[in-house]
Image (cartoon, rainbow, N blue to C red; front, side):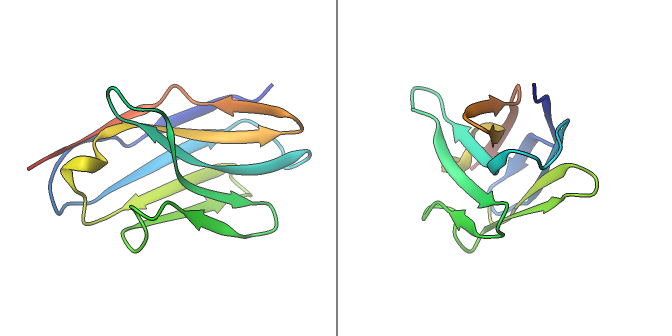
Length: 115
C-alpha cells in the first residue's frame, strides 16, 4: 500500500507561481513511475509530468517550459514547481505512483488561477 499526500495548492493570479509537494509513503522497490496529473471540472484527468526511476521526465505540451517536476528520493517527496500560471491551469492536481502493477493517487490539491 502506498499513501500519497499533496499540499501547496491555492488561489493565484495569472502569471503567478505555486509549488506543490507530495509526500509518498513508499520505498523505491517496485516503483515503475511517479508524477503529477490534474483534472479540471468536466474534463478527464490528464498527465502533467511523469518521471521514471531511470530519471526520464516527460511533460504535457501545455506545461512545457512553465512547470518543473522534481523528486527527493531520500525524503520520499515529489514536487511540482509551476510558474507563469494561466487560468486554464485551474484544476485539482494529483500525485501518482505506479508500484508493480497498481496505480496510487493522492487526495488532490486544488489550484485556481484567476485572470
